[in-house]
Length: 357
Length: 263
Image 1: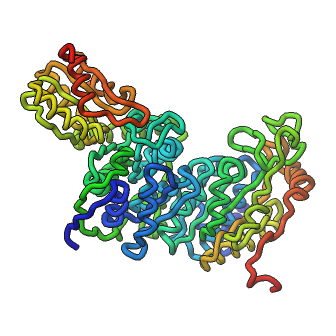
Image 2: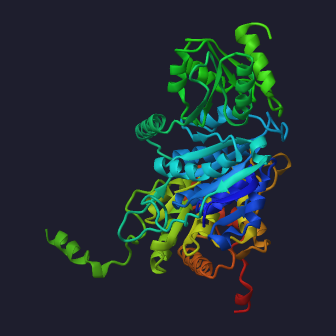
C-alpha cells in the first residue's frame, strides 16, 4: 500500500500507525484525553488486519504488566494513558526498565497534580525524563509536536526500544492528542515472525531457559547491572539526540520548547522578528537524551535563553545544566491546562531579557 | 572395602526408585525445611516433563517466597511485579496462544495486592493455569498477617491472633474465582502427605490438560504450611494445618467442567 493522506486526531494517528507498524499487542485503559487510541483500535479490527491483539485491561496497572509479559516474549507491545494513569504504571515501567524490555508507552499529558484537569499540560516532564518509578533508570523520551509526529514516532519508538532493549515513551499532550491535522500514513510493516534470543517463547533443546527478571539479590551483581544500564544510557546520549532548530543562525535569544509549546514558540519567533528582535527556537525532539551539547554550543553565542513549557518549570533545569551559567536562563509557561499564547512568550522575553514591553 | 563395593553395586540406574526430574534444575532450594513449595515445584516439573510441555511452557513467578522459581524449573519464566502475574500471563498467552502459560503465586501476592488481576484474569477466562500456594502468611517478609490468615492465627502483625473485628475476615479467593463464569476448573489440594501429593498431582494434571482446550482459567490452590512463619516444626505445622486450615479451606474440587460432571 502506498503512503496515504488522512485527516486524523493525534490519538487516532498513533493507533493507526501502530497497526501499520506491525505492533503485536496493545493493552490500555480508558482515560481522557487519550481514550481515542483504545477506541480507534477496537473499531479498526487490527486482529483481522494484521493479527494485532488489543485488550482493554481492568486497570492501568494491569495494562503495563501485560506490556511486561508481551515484551518479555519479544513482541512489539505498547500501552497508552494520560498523566494519572501513567503515575499508576510507574512500578511496572521500572520493572520493564530493570528487565531491559523493549516497549512503547504513550502519555497524552493532562494538567495535575492529582486528578487535575483533562486539558493539556507539560507537567510530567520530570516523571518522564528522570525515571518516574523507583531505581536508577531512564526511558527514551520522544516529544511529538504534530499529528504527523504522533504517527511517525510509533515506528521510531519501536526501533529505538529494540535497538537498546529499553522502554520508549512518547510524551505528547492533550492538545496534540485531540487536534486534527493531515497525516501521511506509512505502508504496512508485517508483524515480525522472528524474536530476540532472550525472549521467553518456550525453552527448546537448542538453548538454555530464558528468564525475564529485574531481581539480583547479590549487591555486587546488582551494582554491575546498574553500571551496565548507565553505560547503555551513555550510548543513547551519544547516538540518539534529536532536535530541530528554527532561525537560530543569527539569534540573540533562544527559545527552548518541545511539543505544543514548540509550535506556539515558532509563531513567537516570527512575531519577535517582526519587531526586530532576533529570536530563534530550539525544539528538543528527544527529551531523554536531551540536546545538552547543542544548547551548550548556542550558549556561547546568544544573550539569553527562555525555556517555554506548560509547567511550573521542569525542562528549564536541564537547560540550566547545559548552559552552566554562561548566559541567563529563564522559564515561562502557563499551567493548569492553559496553552501559552505566542504573544505572551514574546512579551515575557522582552520583560525578562530586554527590559520593558 | 567390601561394603563400599556393595553400595556401588546397588547404585545403578536400573535400581533408582526416585530421582530428580529433568525439568527441575539441580539448584539448592531456597525454601525452609518442611515447606510445601518444594513438593509443589516437583509436581509441576514432573507434569511438564510427563506431558512433554517443556518447549511450550512459559511460567510467571510472583514476588514472595517463590520469586526464584526460575532457579528451579528448567522452562522459560518471567518474574512479575507483586500481584501482577495474572496480567503478565494474560499477555503471554494472548500473544503466544499455542503455549502453556502458568502463574505460581502465594497468598499475599494473589489474594491481597493482586486481587484485582486475579479476579479479572479469571473473569475474562484467560486460558492460563493459576497455581495458588496458600499458607496463610507472608513467608518471605517474615511472617506477617496475610488476607488468608485464619481467625485467631498469630503472625508478626497479628501477634495476639487475627481479630476479625479490626483486621477483617480471611479472603477465600478460590471460592470467589469458582463463582466466575471465566473459570473452567477450580480445585483445592494439599501436599503434606504422600496420598495428598498424589491427589494434588492428579488435579494439576487435569488442570494442565484442560488448558489445552482453551475453555477458561484453571485454578489450583495448594493449602500449605509455613513452619518458619508459624514458628512450628514441620511435623507440628502439618498437624496444625490439618486441624485449623482445612476446616476453613476444605480440600477438593470447587468447580469441575460441566461435561465432566457425573463421571
